[in-house]
Length: 152
Image 1 (cartoon, helix red, strand yellow):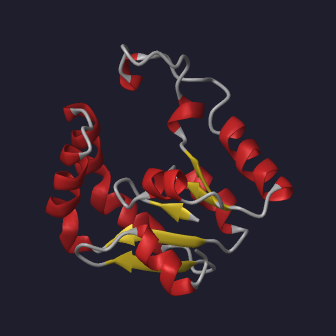
Image 2 (spheres, rainbow, N blue to C red):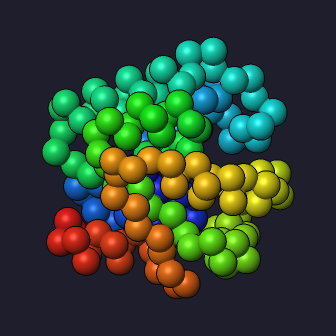
């Protein structure tokens, strides 16, 4: 399942044992120091292949729900062959998502990057016709989707 920032991926992974939040940032940036923001760290030259390898390896070795967080075109294309579920906010919810990112303590740089990409990412998701797409309504989170589907 590919889900956008602020939809509740980390929350789900912390609450449910059958959910894995595979954060692309752990693969994209070198180093794990919390005192250095990710955008100031060097990029991993093995990204995105290292991330895709981790996704596909997990799919082969676990039956858990895997939450993917990267919305790069190449990653979306590679994952789309699996006919996954794509989960995004509705187009009119940018302000709500900015508030979510602020409440969870994301940096100004993170929030500005998400604002800049918001509509582009939603447009990018539309080109994939072989995936199920769910657009979250105001106040809705991934947990609501997974409960409705009977997955948790």
